[in-house]
Amino acid sequence: MPAIISVGLLLLAWELYAIYSGIRPTILPAPSRVFEQAMLNREALADNALPTIGATLLGFACSLSAAFVLSMLVDFYQPLRRALFPVFIVSQTLPLVAIAPLVVLWFGFGLAPKIMLVALVTFFPMLVALVEGYESTEVEIGQMLRAMGAGRWRIFLLARLPSALPYFFAGLRISITYAVVGAIFAEYAGAAKGLGIYMLNAKNNFRPDLVLAAVGVSAALTLILFGLTVLVQRLAMPWERAGKKTEGKGPRR
Amino acid sequence: MSRLELRHVRKAFGGLDVLADISLSVGAGEFVSILGPSGAGKSTLFQLLTGAEHGEGEMLFDGARLDDHGRHFAFMPQRDALMPWRRILDNTTLGLEVQGMRRQAARACVAPLFAEFGLAGFERHFPAQLSGGMRQRAALLRTVVQQRDMLLLDEPFGALDALTRTAMQRWLEQMWRHHRWTALLITHDVREAVFLSDRIYVLSARPASIVREIKVPFSRPRCLGGEHARQASALEAEILDIILNPQSIQRTRP
Ligand SMILES: Nc1ncnc2c1ncn2[C@@H]1O[C@H](COP(=O)(O)OP(=O)(O)O)[C@@H](O)[C@H]1O
Ligand SMILES: [Mg+2]
Image 1: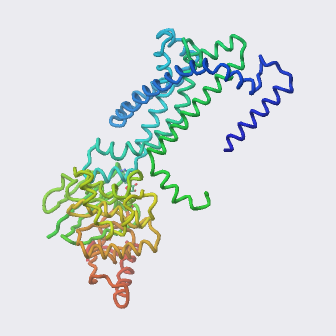
Image 2 (image 1 turned 120 degrees about the horizontal axis):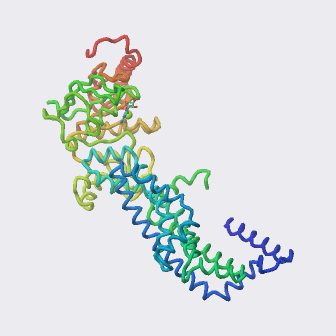
Image 3 (image 1 turned 45 degrees about the horizontal axis):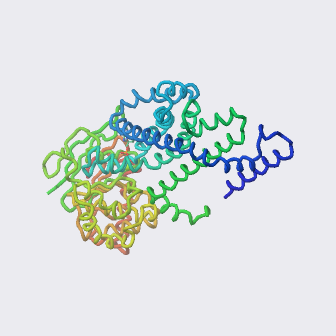
């Protein structure tokens, strides 16, 4: 609720500034105009949003699977961590601006380079989240399971994997926002369709209102994906809320 | 007669001597406590027994060397180690599941014990929704249903407030009279050791060795008032003296 008020106030200030400063709409269009144009061009926007959503989700699915498999390998075989992590850290420092055009150059204007870029920006945060999550397992739980006669694989499934869930979802919330940005960047560098290329074309046609409309769509997309992760987390971790309900009787509420 | 027997067990972590020389025995159906200051190496002893660490010396169970560690002990770690993501019922079946029992069968095994452990009605709760005392009872239930030869309890009530702890000690004493588990309890609470045990081994500070073995002569059920309470207090005072003035005692065993 406070978020809605603050965004509303910001939009209001922007609207007033655009009306009373006499700035030309080809430089700074008022929010009302952006909205109006967005409605007029909604088909084109939807048409271009779909490939972006596709690239985001597919890329994210790829990086998630890869991060999951690798996190397990690293957890079972610690030396791998020292061997691989430097490589991944370097992969995170590559500037997207420079990499995106290259990837498009190598893999063409289709879906593949977008998926790759999305995967590139989201893989490492997910891997780190998972590996740290496994390590957060309570030592006593591990000792107890071993005393019960559980092997490593059993301990991983019964204790380490569930212990990693909060970390996993924290990583997911951050990565999902990177994923949208990554997809748009990839399209910006060259695509047949997509929000990124739509923004580029709108800019080249001196239509900042349409650029902003596309920005609005991508923001909405990010918010929806973010909301979905929160929802999935609630469903996947019912014990978190159950615990809070009993604690929350205090001054918190 | 004695089920568990340790002879001159020693353990060092790197250069740090933790257990200097531990010899002890626990008989069938006997409740034995290991009493010592914090950091003495009490939990380390359980790590050796459960096979998490390896030390020197001999560890025998029913006369045979301990090597397949999983078999004999049901271990309750120092913190309750309940899994926050499992409901209480599923936490208590954990040991049976690890042994290969189907989840449904394990639940059927454990469910009838909930009333006796004061947990009836909380089967579907998550650990975070339970009080400290209930969590400890759940952890104990998870431990005893494994049907192992012997219980290893590491400071089960150490994290509880004084009132709850006393209530839990009385409850455990009563439970033990019904079930006669063979049990080894770690504690740093003198009163707890005297109230619950048949015998007490008093440990020195690190590197730990056994300073004294004490038989607790009181009959069960352990009475709470009158002459008994006076004798118990006298014994507690004597033990405190041993722990707090170690230099005055040179003998190892009385
Ligand atoms: N895995 C380990 N590696 C190194 N030192 C350890 C390890 N486990 C315990 N210790 C040390 O052994 C000593 C005794 O620990 P512990 O057995 O937990 O004491 P207690 O249970 O009696 O309080 C402590 O000083 C602790 O730092
Ligand atoms: Mg300890």
